[in-house]
Image (tube, rainbow, N blue to C red):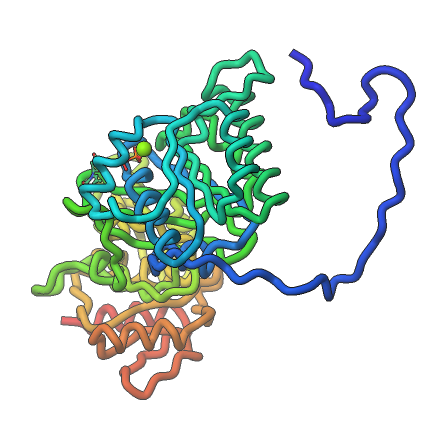
Amino acid sequence: MVEAGPPGSLAGGKPAKGKILEFTALKGGGEFEPRLLTGNAEFDRACGGGLVPGSALLIGGDPGVGKSTLLLQIAAGLAKSGARTAYISGEEATAQIRLRAQRLGLSESPVALAAATALRDILSTLKADRPDAVIIDSIQTLWSDALPAAPGTVTQVRACSQELIRFAKGSGSVVMLVGHVTKDGQIAGPRVVEHMVDAVLYFESEQGRAFRLLRAVKNRFGAAHEIGVFEMTGAGLREVANPSELFLSEPGEPVPGAAVFAGIEGTRPVLVEIQALVSPSTLAAPRRAVVGWDSARLSMLLAVLDARCGLDFGRHDVFLNVAGGLRIAEPAADLAAAAALCSSLFDRALPKTTVVFGEVALSGAVRPVNQAEARLKEAQKLGFSGALAPAAGRSDALTIVNAETLADLIAWVRAQG
Ligand code: TYD
Ligand code: MG
């Protein structure tokens, strides 16, 4: 099937002459409208400090992770703060949503609710009603009668998103599109929407855990990698204001192979335990397995430890795990990963009161990382008393061991009990 081009495209006859654009300056252009706040601090943060009027968001996630629950709570929060909010469900009947609202204690909230799937009806309603914010749950259930394709197909998802995004830009309403994704990305639907919207948030959970991460993977109006943390309870999603508590191990005796990394997720410092297991291998090609970190990064780190420090991981299986289901993308985690690896290799437990951070260069040097102060401050706030960090780190409250090279790290690990 050939897709119809935009109006005035080359299809048939001579190209029409375009009209002359009027250029304008970068500054000026009137007042910016303030962001809409949902009153849910975790959600607002993940969005970059509230919702920008006229923007379109995609909130993706596995079926059953809690998207509808989250967005009903968000709708209620917006309505409470005075924004006119509509929740349009294509998946559930209004009775079902009312039941959920009851369970969440939100029945009295002035959210405008509708069950609909026909794009034409939805757009007519929105254009007449002009809500400040509208939630479409989900984009896969909508269908445009201009297309012969079935709902949920890439063609439909793309066309319906395009229309709704155009409505957002034209009216100033915030449009939030819910999309189902499977972990392996089987359903292509929401993926095609990613580049069309202003922000993409993924709502994720680890198997068998109650907490949920709302992760900004793209945001034109805020930091990507920002996370919001929630816990699913019997009465909806609870905000977790201090996520470090989730990503640190239980109190108790320290064990070899664990190091606490002082990380930054988006704009927020988060402490998380990195766990390594290094054990002798009988395999010709020993195993390397990583959860929550980049496996290429692990290979690099092992190669540097081998080449610069003479540590032989070549006859060992190496497993690395980031606690709590967090995924770390920062190079600042290198030193903490190295600490966990050496701790396991030497069978020396690291003190549970010390955080570690720093980027490792191929030369074996430890490089300073951004926001060292914020990392140290968070560690201090959570009762840590020491840090192993690159030379630039300073703190009055913590005892800092400066690591300039991996050799400093190794000496420090060997000196532990
Ligand atoms: P739901 O929001 O319907 O998920 P999604 O829209 O992503 O498919 O919620 C899914 C699960 O959450 C469901 O198994 C029930 C559970 N849940 C709770 O544990 N507590 C609650 O208060 C609610 C409303 C749901
Ligand atoms: Mg749902």
